[in-house]
Image (cartoon, helix red, strand yellow):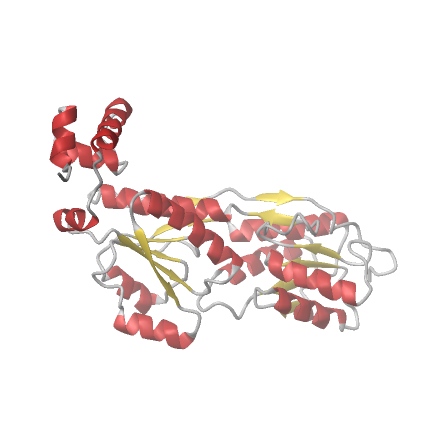
Length: 339
């Protein structure tokens, strides 16, 4: 005979709704009672029916995740961490990879996610029309990129402050000609390059260093782009003695370009990255660390909390901690290269 949730309720002396909350890890059930219910369900061989739960609750038990580049390290790490949280709570993930302008336009025009998900985790920054389209879904929304915006729970970091710490480190070492490898062109509507550039500009201004536009190069947030950008900077009549790369992947590309030009790091050129990519320690990269996976987990947790307590006040923006990590790619400028 099939064991029902009612059987588990009778065995533990509580209501079926209490059993449901306990087995799904919801609030309102003491840990002692939760343990009793879990044990009873296991002993009776009870398995929750997804279809029955959906019919009873009106939920799809699916979370929509919208990403601009699923293959990029940052987005992949956030997605993997968030999916683990969703899965442990009994939710599936419906992924939309909007890596091209055409795919993005098609998604927001047709909005195929409507009535198919209970919440949306957006890893891209929508423009006003796109944001309005997501808000029209009437489900909880969260993001791990960009600043606060109406209708979204935001989990992020202080990109501007992180960039300031990186560039200030180079200034304190004595560097005056500091280049920057940015990702100004990608992805669409992403504010991170602007925030990190502002941090760069702020420190230069505070140090009395005149901005030289020639010292900025676009690396597209890829290793290949970072290598290309570093090559452009090295071709200048007065190349930089230090470089701030807005991501570790671009910094790694810069290191490859420097090695190809037979320049030593940090003796000839210092390099600082941002992110603390999983390979950063391997190459000894000085960087600004951000908790990428933790941002995904926190955003997922907050979405599930909103589903559990739909009448609760929307969470305030969450700013995760960052920290500067000193490794082997920075040093005072070589006297022969400092202009």
